[in-house]
Length: 242
Image (tube, rainbow, N blue to C red):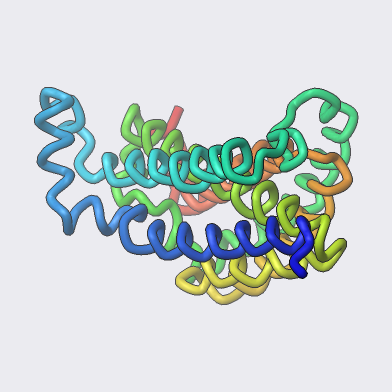
């Protein structure tokens, strides 16, 4: 006979699988262009994005990440699993005392970011938005979409998956979450995809310890923006940003 923990874990795993599939095909920047959404968005925005060609794809990326990785899992928690969002890491209260731990992690990663930002594979890959080197509002619009995307990543992997599987699998929930988390990095430079294994395990463990994925958003966004700025600095165009 199925126990409640088994049922909940099954719902989390099946929902996660479907959401990963939907996001891969319809949530990423490539779909924004191939589907013709760019034209509809430009019309809706009265042409306000025309000054920043392509940036809409990253705003779409951030929007779909928040819907599919944050909003839908939250709805599943509340109306299907009938659990408190706080039990799945959707909490801010009580997390301040854990911020030094996340700050220390950023400082540990900073020398690594400085080092790998000089690799040709990273110089050719970041920032994703090809016109980021021009700076201005276009760069910050891109970073906004990029940041929202990470909010969805943390809510989904370190929140919904980790805490959803925790009652049934214990510490193994962090390892289980790390598998698909690593796989979404397969299109990135190999060193980063490899580092995703460590990042998944560390961020998952830290989320369980703090009972929240929210500090992870701050860390992930900080690391991502730092990488973009380091690459732009090495390209000699950092002055365009500020």
